[in-house]
Image (cartoon, rainbow, N blue to C red):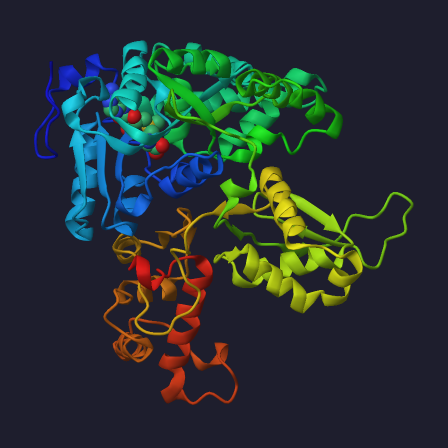
Length: 540
Ligand SMILES: C[S@@+](CC[C@H](N)C(=O)[O-])C[C@H]1O[C@@H](n2cnc3c(N)ncnc32)[C@H](O)[C@@H]1O
């Protein structure tokens, strides 16, 4: 059996080819996936009554970690955790290795090798993450993923596996089959991609005046693919392997490896918040969550799942009783939008609409709801405990609270409904980020290094954002050694050297030129807090 090799060792090309490795030719851009972050897995496990290990000192394994864009920010955020990535493609392992030469994260190892070679001696992990791999590998590797997710999972560990889902993926599979057939005689991956895009354009043009379901689907998929990078098109549609699975079959296979279904990383998927009430009620009569999940997939035409698994024998309770909610914190951002016209044409003046975190629209006339939304938005991306939220609501909607006689437990129940609908998020423990910038503000080593190279940085919400050029230039200084005056000094130096472009025009009219660097430093650090880039002092 091939041994797992260190980042410096070189895998032989025939081995990579035999395992179906095309990622050396077309490496996959490696991004953070918020749904796979151990914080999310921890929260779902806690909500369902389990006792997962807190991520900050957990052992975390990512299978198929590509260039490390998902696991490395986690390691950088949790210096007391132990993170291991395993990746087949040497090119991508080298990328991760070089990146870490710059970042210097101590608690991570990225190893070149196949998941199929992982043995029990590799150790146990509290979180095993496998995103975007399961559907794209041959059957023996899928078996290995499930085996490792059980064999190498600690007692209270949580495994995350994402995969393309049927029946929704059958439609996408039609596109894949057309593209695959069209490029079957082409070897060069670049030419394959070019020809696949050409065929899509041809099909859409040919259907321009058609009103059929087929034409509508083609238009939608072509539009979707036109927004995706070539790497996505290649690995999704032009790869040899891409299998989709019925949810029930995936769970049946996991069961053979001693695992059981915990839930979805995105809980709103399990509670079917977007379905009509009647549909939800019917689904709720099906007590087996895997069975009801299958019917939900049929209704929604779901194409992808991010499923969490734990060892069989652990007692899961999905009731979300009060004891499971002990210590829960809520976070959400509500952006006001124009309310939809009521059907009669008249609008209720108290009616307000908001866009929520999951890009849903919420419309309400209830002052208490307005107060909840304002309170949460005010501290976002930070969170509030239920006590803190209640105190905020008492301030903002005291009269309404008295009139409606709303108790704290009603607020908690409302928060559960909003969370299940996907409007807000729950987390346990304190915030790992802060919006305040007293002391010496800190950004993770991963984000600081990203900012040295480009304007895309990973936030503590595990999302990539694009920052302005000036923000990019300032971020590397936030390594915890400078207070706001120290940051202002660095800004002044860059301005004096002609390397930073800031001017008085964008500032308050009475500001003196000598005070500009400090004013800019305060503004930028405040912005970074709002973006979710500033580490809370305990997490630093
Ligand atoms: C679609 S990419 C997803 C990468 C990353 N997880 C993400 O979501 O961005 C699939 C990755 O799995 C890796 N892979 C394929 N077979 C593997 C195996 N047998 N063992 C470990 N990694 C493998 C590929 O090289 C590739 O980097």
